[in-house]
Length: 390
Image 1: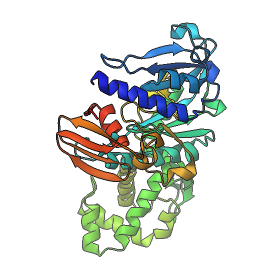
Image 2 (image 1 turned 180 degrees about the vertical axis):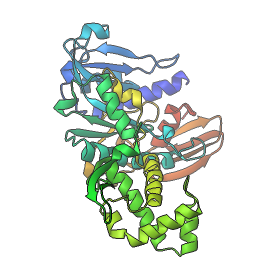
Image 3 (image 1 turned 45 degrees about the vertical axis):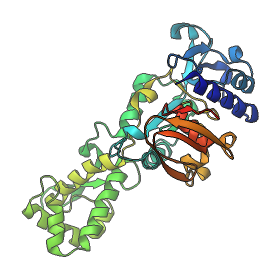
Image 4 (image 1 turned 180 degrees about the horizontal axis):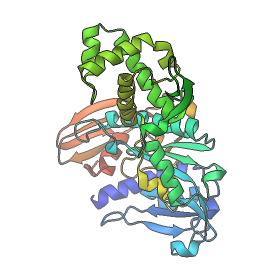
């Protein structure tokens, strides 16, 4: 990046911070702060700063106009100490990070930025389902990162003192790591007709957790094949691993004859159906897990982006979102700062680029272009363009 481009971005970030008010996180005085300035030679993190070192956050942002700004998940006795051992850890928020380019089924370079962020929003909804329904967390902050995806900050008191191992267990749960079908089912002893000894009925709990998710996928399959003719239904069931024609026919018959039992969670209506349910449950982990970035969640000392700041790799806002805002939130429109709207600038591209931002989609060839400032800021921040001479 040329100095002319850096100087322009520094100045416009300053203009943005002069007109915006940024709300610090809870317990801001106990957190470590860090930032990356606009400097030649690549990004260099300045960290181990306390809130006292920075001063008023709005004054600091307008004065330093950093490229990126972060605060720690952890709180400390002495957050400005130069080493983690000297800080005196008190506790940490539980942070979840979803990056669009790390999601299964997303191919950077083939999928557009907009498509990747839409996939990431879907992954966010899966994560929130776990945090709400399975864990019952109540103190959640949802943030668009300004770049590749979303962050969720959990600040419930019971997780503050969890260390790495405890946080890893939460990671494993939401990612479905090590999930075993036998652990999902409950067993009930029942008296079997014509039998001398009681039998066991195996069921999936329909009330919540991974058992409920597995059962929902089983029921989706039951409904789908029940509406198909026999030939199509058997062919579909044979597509599951370990299900041959004999098992497929037996499982189909069991589905049609025991629909009410299956709806209640019973997966023991026939051995062939039990085998099928086991395969479907395993596939539900792939479909329903939340593909979070594990090191972020397990790290009690992690630095995370400050909501309300600007992302120096995109020029978009790091935006805190309410549940009501989330559904209709369109990051490539709603995270475009007002500072960069309503006028145009000139940029120089060395290579052709596609850009979809602020409600417009354009193909730009190599050369000089006059475009909306938010688009130019995005291209320059990404390192794809230099500031043109006006």
